[in-house]
Image 1: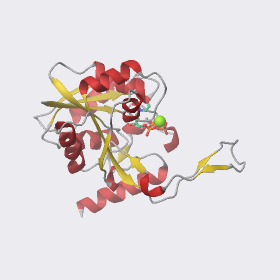
Image 2 (image 1 turned 120 degrees about the vertical axis):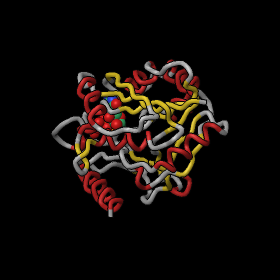
Image 3 (image 1 turned 90 degrees about the horizontal axis):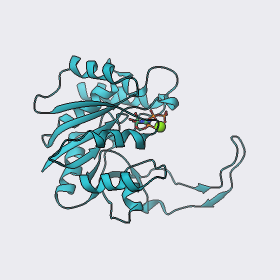
Length: 234
Ligand code: CTP
Ligand code: MG
């Protein structure tokens, strides 16, 4: 079986604040996207990486990939993304060649995921799961609220039992045909790919995630990411 990774990298990074699109911002001097691509290409099981670039940024991203040393055994494709993460993933799926039967979807915004986590996801799909997500238990207790305008107190509706909750990461791994079917039939906006599989009524399983697979979302996450890189080099 052949495995490809789709990397949605077309977001603007609004929560990170003003500047270049998030995936192109530097972490210790190297664009976040390059860290993410290397993290995927490090897995010997990955034969193709499809990068979904900002809508008008595909040529720039192609140049970026050419300018950085990447493993020879991995092929790279760059396609332009869309207005939502879902549309961007779809653009990546549309670019996959024949012969790929396992697809991982990995956020460019999770540049530091260790290769063991990537391999764990691939292995679970190879072992027969149609949809696999890496995830971790939560540190915080979570409340469901009735949303109110910013600044107003929000009434609590429920407190789900923390021990049964998981915070979901990427790469998420899929049987290719199943993920394509999900993207063809689910139209609601979702925040991860596995929830589209759930909407089809198909099973999704969780495997262990990793602390270093956290998503770079807000400015403090950049501080943490650069500290993790510094620790790796030490
Ligand atoms: N993404 C994408 N296309 C979009 C929106 C998001 O490919 N139209 C990608 C991002 O580049 C990122 C991943 O989806 O790698 C996860 O999204 P998120 O962390 O929300 O990134 P942004 O959408 O860029 O950030 P923000 O929501 O703060 O603007
Ligand atoms: Mg976003």
